[in-house]
Length: 211
Image (cartoon, rainbow, N blue to C red; front, side):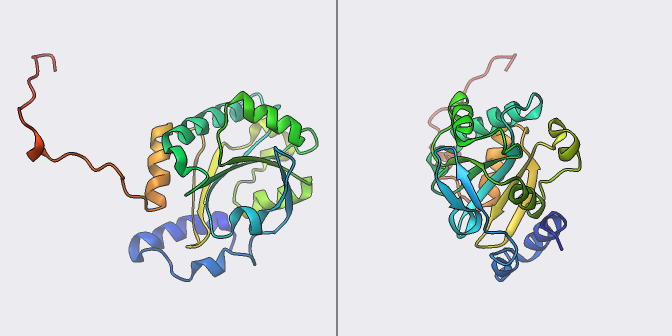
């Protein structure tokens, strides 16, 4: 079973029985290829060992010469990063993998990341084309349109929690506040700023007729 088909089943099982205790072995080192990738800073990393193992992640596919969805995806995810604050790089890690590795060198990816004012905890990655195709397929992010026309690739965002083995696919161009809420809910974060109780109100707010 591929991750694409399993995402819906995992979510259904989690809603019925809670997080699957033994799922980590199913979607672990035996499933994800530990291929080398290069970050926008020129550092070589291994996909499973360095980027995925023991982490919660949000992964999408982009390429810097994209004239359609990629700029919108990146801009939206940058807003999500702002909303999540310092949780990105601590509680969840963002990865954007290029599907045009021949042109998207580390230097090109670095300039692209700087263009969108990307903050810490978000890596742009390139590597061998065959390795990226394999990763895309295993992550459930590959599209039949990619080979013929990269501009036709689907703007999807794969959320994953490697320790629990839970994965969920979303649109990468959805409302940033909605995506931030989805990420927090998926990863089981609790609101660190609880809502005030009505008992704390000193006076009943006054509204005019329009309000």
